[in-house]
Image 1 (tube, helix red, strand yellow):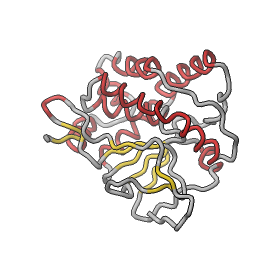
Image 2 (tube, rainbow, N blue to C red):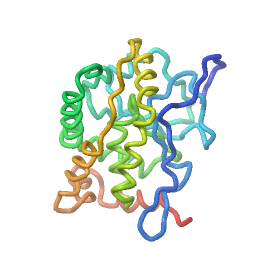
Image 3 (cartoon, rainbow, N blue to C red):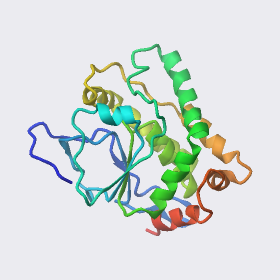
Image 4 (tube, rainbow, N blue to C red):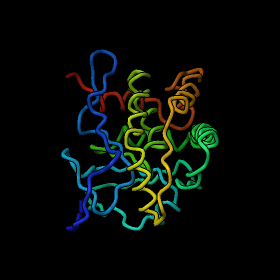
Length: 240
């Protein structure tokens, strides 16, 4: 990573390594292989892990990418792959609204991503299965679109529903810091944070599992090659 000296350097606020999550047969997600975070910015301190990532999957819209005031400057060794999951996304749009309306918006947004961007999700999974590791997946806040793609990845490799939801909800503990970082990155004043709920994620998990071929059938029906789920398991999992 090209990281110039900056007196305002700060750690990521919603970064985590998915390594260690358990899967069937006593296997675990390989450490320092599959990361998730909020938008990386100039001045973010690198985590104390293998870094920089060799592959980045950026789920933001064009407007979000162009609006960031101080984007991360990756080196040529990092492959940047832009796969927008919501072409018109604006992470500040529903901030400050009453929580009941926000919840309804989020439930709709999550379902919309799975229904309208299924091919993009399949493309992202294919990329993760074939990528050079470590892979970093991010959007703006690193909790909604990133949460959907991470949940799909973990479901495909057999991580339990409880573990998937638990990881998803971990972002709530830093909701205020995430909101402040995202708004300031876009040159706007922060509003109250919007927490995630398990219902949002369980809704989309039930959608792909309801496919006649289960989650793997759903993935293949939306453009992935049949070998991708097995390759994903082979590359992301290991015995402890």
